Amino acid sequence: MRCVIVSDFATVNGGAAKVAIESARGLAEAGHDVIFAAAVAPVSERLSHPRIAVELLGSDEVWRVSRKLAAARQGIWNEAAHGWLTSLLACQPRDCIVHLHQWTKAFSPAAIDAAGQSGLPVFVTLHDYFSFCPAGGYYDFRRGGPCSRSPMGTACVSAHCDRSSYAHKLVRVARQWRSDRALAACRDLTFVHVSRFARSFAEPFLPSHARHVTVENMVEADRRAPAEVASARHVLFVGRLTQEKGVVLLAEAARLAGMPVRFVGDGPMADQIRRANPDAELTGWLGPEAVSAEIARARILAAPSLWYETGPLTVIEALAAGVPAIVSDRMGAADWVVDGLNGRHVKQGDLGALVEALRQAAGPVAASWGRTAHARYWEEPLTLSRHVAALRRAMPLDAKRLAG
Image 1: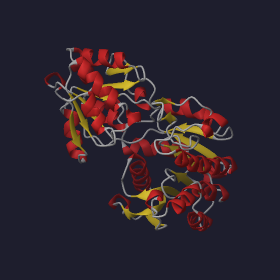
Image 2: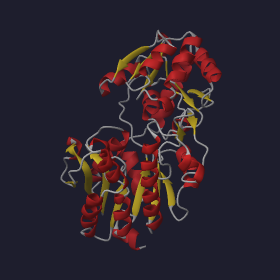
Image 3: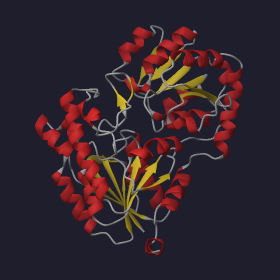
Image 4: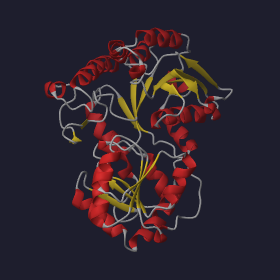
């Protein structure tokens, strides 16, 4: 069997690229031939494997194109990418599948169209909601809360909900129109969801002829003794400091709860975090080993997302380390947190509920949550081999199954 994995980037610069690269590596190690089709260099060392062939378009990320009009045009439809990917897929055997991970940063919806026109089975992993939402997160940045509009309906198109300008929103709308048409034309289409929550949320918005599977992402974690939660005092956030992540809400809640808070990451909301909580600590971005050490030193990790987040993996990493988590009740990571057992669910955007959960975590129950988190995670860890096994169950990975 051969799999063509399509990703804007060939190196790890975010969660989607990391999962695409690790999936390629895992499939290759399981004995499958992989073509990793990327638009933007450089190429990760993880793609160096006898069964992985890397094909590079040599394009730029859309918003790094110097002229704005050219960038917008490429973002809506990258004609060069369409021709390149069409030629690449035309050379593949009929037992090949196409697996798209990311296309909005360079490939554009042209990648979906080329995949569909190939006649090969097309799989699309939803790391976000760009498969139906122009802004990708089903989140209204102007209102500061989740969206409730019908995607691509009149209210959606006319709403200035983008984090940038309305002109930028209209470019996204045009791109979504091309994406919707390309997905509708895919005859053999499967959406791969990274959590049960994300599937239940997204499925009603997606083309009715598609099928749906859930394949959880892999987590890099070494099994060690549970973290010493009882001796820790602070709540930790790890990730990009953006509005939809609920970071300002967390800063204010920690101040009201009297709990120290530490933010690992950076982003546009850093100053607002400091204004909401002058005692908050912000470390900036750290390397993977330093992030793991930060997690192990926390009393609890918080992910109070204001959007319907498909992940994030940092919650799973915390549970694997024996650190409990407080999560929004409307996000994928809530699948792994059992309220009152290994952490807490809080109502999305509810400051009072978050304050109450932090105050509870400051008490002796946090140590019990941490031990339970560690035990439950390691009963069935999210390893790369588990991820690949789930992919193999979901995909027609050999000619016999494809013919059947």
